[in-house]
Image (tube, rainbow, N blue to C red; front, side, top):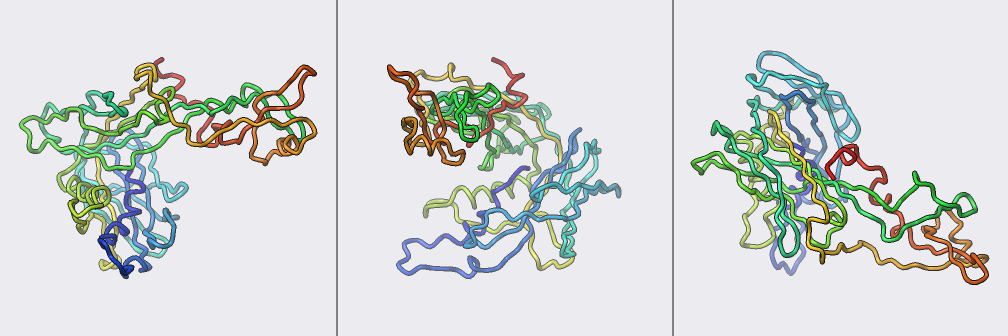
Length: 387
């Protein structure tokens, strides 16, 4: 279910509970050379492809944040002996063709890694997500809270998970009207603009909801992302695409425990870490653990936009860098540095006095080139989105 990145810190979290130690404590697990398989994804039974991500756990002290598992064989199997192969992509990502799987069947993954080991997940039923009723936002004193509403009129879902992708439009601190071309400075063409850009990010927290203790299967204003009033995400226009999954109670309990172990630790009053038991097993050697919980079913999604004009006028984004404008007069060392493409400087405009043009204004690339932090080409949905 697009849980990328959440297992990376789990082993470290489970070993970081020394409080007020005078003497450094280095438990053996931190230095252990474990190399456990991590499996993330949802077997999609709708009219869409399935994406599975495979990686390996790493030593906490190694500094490696992602170790993808490459060249594995990944197969979807159902309980009627049908099989569907996935294709290896970059960085440990495996995808299927567009499939229309029978939602009345149960599904599992069969994975063979390059070291010859076989991993099999338990058969799981296909859970059909009800539609998302709405995604909205509430203005608070220091930002906006994104929320989701949904319900199941058949009262059958009860357990929900949400993922989301954020996209936002932002600007560089300064507008650059010129570009360095070899050893000269020329006017920047429209397709070379680096002032207006778009960036995106994925959810990092585990977002869950349950109506099991309610009389009706209704989720009302369940909080998702919170965006502070000083965030660049709200500078011009912000969009969020929310995906909703229905879950079994076993899957919900697994991810609820994972959320506690990775997000709700830090003080003696928080929940203490607990062991996680997923539904993936190494059949070649049962003593080797695997990390992850494979689910199956469909998802629903909905996108909304938030324009800056909808927000309080006094809110101002904080630019991530300290920026200044400097001058490069013809023939000076500053001008010679500006003519070097890799100097880290970007020309903004020409400088002139009563004698005409005498040089150029410039700034650091971080302050004038938004493409260093995003793309200067708008996404297709942005072009077609509402104004």
